[in-house]
Image (cartoon, rainbow, N blue to C red; front, side, top):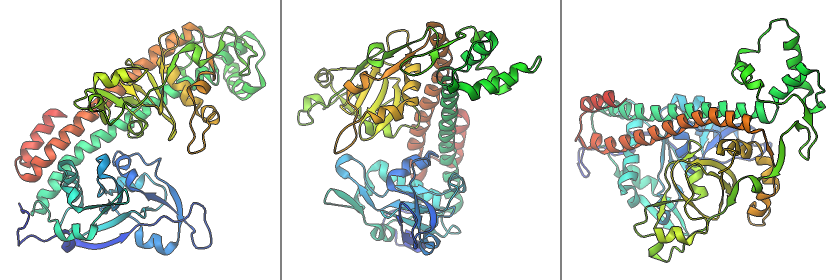
Amino acid sequence: MWRDGDIRGEVLLDFTIYTIGGGWGKEIPDEQHQEPVAVIRGTDIPKVQLGIVEGVPRRWESSSKVTKRQLQPGDLVIEVSGGSAQRGQHTGRVLYISEKTLQRFNIPVIPASFCRLLRLDTTRVDPQFIAYQINLMHLDGSIAKFEVQSTGIANFQFKTFLESIRPAIEDVPTQRAIARILGTLDDKIELNRRMNKTLEAMAQALFKSWFVDFDPVVINALRAGNSIPEKFAKRAAYYREILHRQNSPLPEEERSLLSEDILRLFPTRFVDSVLGPIPEGWEVKAIGEVVKCVGGGTPSTKKPKFWAGGTNPFLTPKDMASLDAPVVLDTERYITDDGVERISSGQLPVGTVLLSSRAPIGYLAINAVPVSVNQGIIAMICEGSVSNYYVYFWVKENLPVIKSKAGGTTFAEISKRNFRSLPMLIPSVASLEKFGSITGSIFTMVVENARSSRTLATLRDTLLPKLISGELRVPDVEKILKDAL
């Protein structure tokens, strides 16, 4: 192992074959900016590490800049500006670029202006290992010595960093073995995230089929010879063709959504309402009449009695932004019992639907642990026949409507008053109970996967310093992982 100050040790600069600052391009193309690119910012790094690329900006850049900055497998993207030591977020975050990372984008990818591309000689050092070594410096806080705080923004001394840091382990095969071990844990975390995305999509498809497209009602109306509103004409034509085929079952992908047992839960007619045509016997009420909608607050940070030694999770939109599954298991900050009492909504029960109401509007989750929330969140406590799963997907489906009711000059915000007045479709108790039963099982799996990912991340962060320091050897850790996974 190479220790800090070892005169034999080469620094990262000695292994560097190319480095360049990022770009930002233009929002729309012009004569100079004709190449579409995805631009990875420092704030995108945690999400991209999990395989989430949807929020990475798409921009237009000049061909010459793309040629010089386009990321390749094995590159590192290092954030050089934008962190904040006061918030406990140091700059210098790093992203290892794998072939899999680039495949998630359908266009070239470059680092953003406040980041740098670092390309190392892969015959002499393993870049993924170096990325884990930098991550360890964030975990133990040693990355802070390369940070300069000015005008509220932290800047990373990139050149000094390259000239100072040595690979913690000399042997490249050992570097690769450690990177492979830790990468296995990250791959499992990513798999859990993708499974949760698929599970949520399944539940969303069920909600849309039953409560937006009203497929069961369309089928029942066709069988009964009742009229179909023009709004559902295409769905009616689709199902009419299927029903006219003698002994023809529904397509396989729809059988589980629209079995005979399911169809019996739905009416055979449509009636008019303020929302347009809805199934007969269903109602429309303001969401504030159906669930308890409350807000939160932030106890004074100047009073230690609200924060010091706190053990009660305190949720903010920032916490929700970092979620990789629609469940809240933990928060960045905690408050004391006195802090909880300071918030009018107190501590919210497990199963509350949580919506960020500003900066931005639209983060959505269900808490799996009791939480208190700040003023940027609307909490929906579901204690009646309308389950939290129905409310969750109703909010998700109606986000455009919710955002259209927002006001504010500095940033868009929807008030609790405006939110409570939004009209909500209330289906029959039987259909709600069935939907709650199916989606409840789905969300149980989502929570289990999310908890598994937290456990795996903790294991990775525990193994990281021990592998790099040599306290644990690769064969020993491989045995640990074989038993754990």
